[in-house]
Image (cartoon, one colour):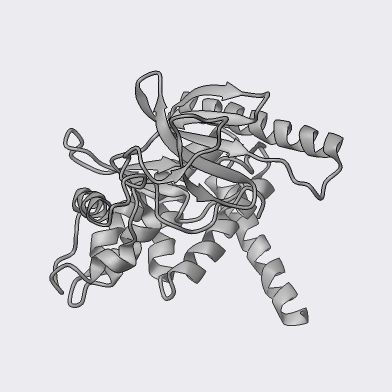
Length: 287
């Protein structure tokens, strides 16, 4: 998908796969413990960019003080400080294969769209990184750096890798929170467009008794009141969820149950989700 950033260290660095092997076999980590372990692993490996430090792959001359830590098909991500605050800089770059005028128009439109959707999401009460500044000339978005956070992907992988632990019970509260957050988003007529467990963060610091679900990467987002669009949004998440985390149908069902319980418009959306699933199966059968 467009605006998809290559899989690498999460915004906090590290990986659920590598961290799981360093824990006791039957110890299921909390989100806070997971974040702490990721930061320690990043520091121990010298990856201070992943841990929020100031060294790493040098940034471009256009972004002094920022360090490149991830690049995808549509954007580069840098770490640094903005007005004294830890920040992530998302820079959309031009595509040489596109006509210059078309490229400029598309890139600017996507930058504007992402900034506006994030603002709309925050107004609706959906936790997202705070946007500090948008430079439409360079198509750069300066946003909050989620220091005390990990991707839900890494957390699910880490919990499931613990031998002898009840991963289903441990992940239930997280799935419930994800469903509630998605319900709030869709009730606000916001379509994410690229829902994956890598774009659903779990944030928890010393002041937070429970982890908070934070949505990131609204590069493909849109605004729509149509149940069809919301059903497709859930279908994208379902496909990504089950392909990234095999044999987790029961976990995903918790997300849908929570979504149904908290959304005012869930009946029509779930009906459309079932229709989209049917169309997907037909395409698979026909080829």
